[in-house]
Image 1: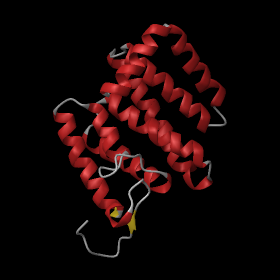
Image 2: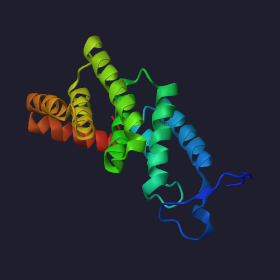
Image 3: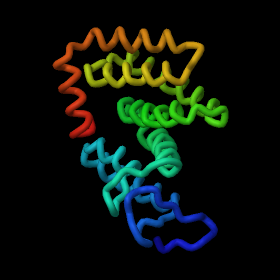
Image 4: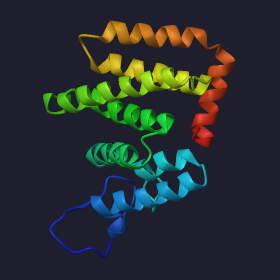
Length: 185
């Protein structure tokens, strides 16, 4: 990184030596650029990968760096691709998984706000009838993550997740999971 200033350098990947140290803002800017290019080529998985994987060592970022980058991804997707419901919901689900693990009052407000946004996106999906099996699996995952975060509505969210999953048969779920993992659909 060639930027100078007071922003600290971070590294929480598998890089060794000085090559892995970067400013978080530089990692975010590079991830945003890579995501824009990927979106233009309809390669959605790259948008996630750009925010989670070190471009130098190709290993996932960990700990606070990962958390900060997943938050930056939600902000980026919300700003530039909010109408892509699948991408937006997927970015929020990834962020919520981090918040569930942190289990801290510091993140409660962000988690509640993200749950509210996820519910809005789910309602929009239902309203526009874009309920493909891939969307429904993403919605089920969203409900499951919200259930793990929200103690007062956990049972309701987990039940909604179970209902959706029961509607999809096993082969569909395996195919969707494979496509999502390998092609970023």
